[in-house]
Image (cartoon, rainbow, N blue to C red; front, side, top):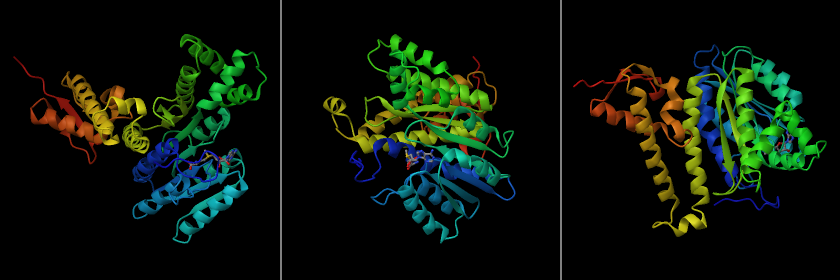
Amino acid sequence: MAVGTGAGLLDEAQPQSVFKHAILDQYLIRFAVMTAAKLSPKRAVLVDGFAGRGRHDDGSPASSELMMLAAQKAKTTTQVDLFLVEKNAADYGRLDEVANEYRARGAIVQTRHGECGAFLDEVIAGAAGASLFLFLDPCGANLPWDQVVTALKAKRGSWPRTEALLNFSAGLTRRAGGQVKAGQLDADGVKRLNLVCGGEWWQEVALGAHLASGAKDWEAAAHSVAEEYGARLARAVDMSGSVTPVLGQIGRQPIYHLVFLTHGAQGLWVMSDALAVAHEKWLRTLGPSDEQAEGMLFNTADHQVDELRQLALLRVRENLEHLLADGKPKAVAQHTREIFGQSFGLAREKDFNAALRAMVADGRAEIVTRGKKPHQHVIRGSITTG
Ligand SMILES: C[S@@+](CC[C@H](N)C(=O)[O-])C[C@H]1O[C@@H](n2cnc3c(N)ncnc32)[C@H](O)[C@@H]1O
């Protein structure tokens, strides 16, 4: 298990970073290739607005190098350009060194030293005609609401695609929530969260969730505020998306939530699969908690992952049966939420494939139109008579 020292001596991937990096590893190349396929030229721009050093001290790729690797893997079909911003001078120096390695191999990697917000206009202008993915991953407060909304709406309309993955800090909500409860409305945390949320609405949400959960801690508040932030942002920019808590340990409070925003139904499908892969990787990194290990016959992460898989498969089967019960044709990607249900972000695409295969094999479903990928199928339930 790779865990950082916490003292800042060694920069290694911590479990909460393993999760987000696994998502980037899975998702970015699929985003770039799929969304640029119909563009001319086929070009996608990936932005790491709070980039860090690009690579961990143990040599494993961090977010920016994962983007560079995606660009390298996609290059036979898609031009993937990168735009990376880092404020800390030493970290920027390291980031630029990693970028130089990839520039030497022909990649277009722009690096900027400074405040992320100051470069958004340049990013948007540079992504004209290309699809754009914004990864905004600060340690604390994210960019102010207006800046995020402007950046997401800047390219107008839903094509070429713009998508975003934002880190919404649970620590900030806990701190600011405590300050609101103590009547410290001028405290730094409160002011920051007001800016991030574009108003004071979160204060009532946080306090309400905190009190309703017995006022022991701020976990419920962190979930409620992140969910509401995601929903409000999606409405403001006319997108849909998901909000996923990321924990540093099983059973602990979330460190942050990942807010994903997409225009496309396909984006949600592909993200669900990426989240499920990330969840498995995160579980394997942690291994079972001491409490869980006590009750387990086999004390292995494999066992945990298998259990998760089986439950996800069961749920997807039930959901699919329900969805197809009316016998009408359904475009799979348009029904991502219904198909994955409670297992959104836990079920893999292969779980859907297995569930559909089983239904087709026993005559309860058919593939009306077969797409290149499973989410592109149109499927229908077979209504049995008598
Ligand atoms: C959580 S770390 C980034 C981790 C990285 N995205 C990854 O996943 O490997 C946040 C980084 O943002 C940088 N930072 C903080 N405020 C910033 C700002 N306003 N603009 C750009 N970078 C900033 C910090 O120096 C830090 O390196």
